[in-house]
Length: 124
Image (cartoon, rainbow, N blue to C red; front, side, top):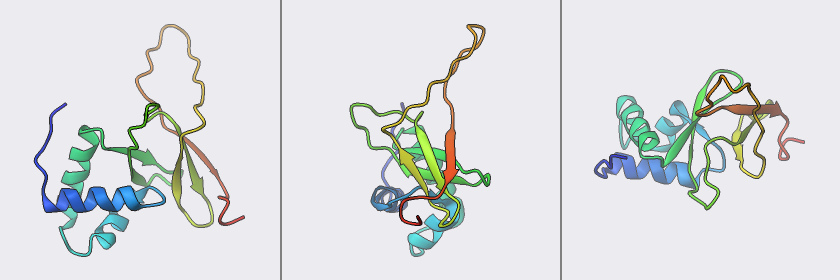
């Protein structure tokens, strides 16, 4: 895995994602980085962070791509459940639940995106 140099933009974006309680969209990151970088730079940095395995993408039920920092625990996996709240629109990683995907032997699964939609505990 190729390591990219650290820049102010990369450090800022990664810190924002690490401190976020939920996955963030590009638009949310643009607001939360307070002008440290422009929208194109944010796209480039997010791509680098995904390639470095520091961040993973989450596609919400609305088709919006959000990004979450990886925790790199002993059980680190991008193939976990994501919860999308219909009320507050937050998307959170639920890493204690790993869905089981069973396909015939003709298929090779490399990854999956499993999103559950409903109402989160804060909005209940």
